[in-house]
Length: 95
Image (cartoon, rainbow, N blue to C red; front, side):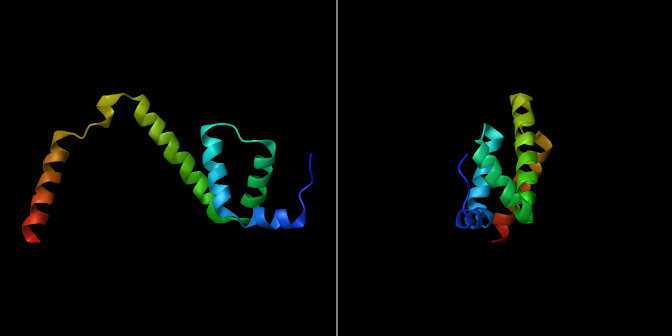
């Protein structure tokens, strides 16, 4: 395996954009060993990306659960729709 020089290491450690890309890529498929290493290096020093990864995993899990439960789960109930319409009408009347 090719060694990572210090300049590359620094760019990996401070590249949140690439880290978030790798986090999302990892959730939908496989990432290479090099990408895993780069992500691990970045996450070791970036608590913001660690938080992003946790939130992203949770959101993806919730979306998969919602989609697997069928189309009926994606509909709003009538009571909520009525309250929402009333709020919209009230907002439009006052503005």
